[in-house]
Length: 89
Image (tube, rainbow, N blue to C red; front, top):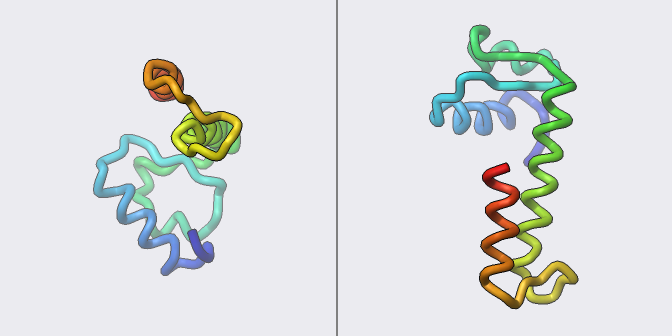
């Protein structure tokens, strides 16, 4: 992603704000205070753990699309089922 300086984070935060989120959870870096509106900004390590776990599950499910990995799915129904489990759990 790049450095966690104001200019690097500004690109990411602006892209997220365009999506219209109700809440944005961060790790408490002081730079976020100037970039994210206070009414939707939350600092919580607890929620970050859950978000990172969801990202890991998604990466593992997407691994099934790559032919040269152990997780590769030859059957399209198995691939669909695995991705649905990750996205709709």
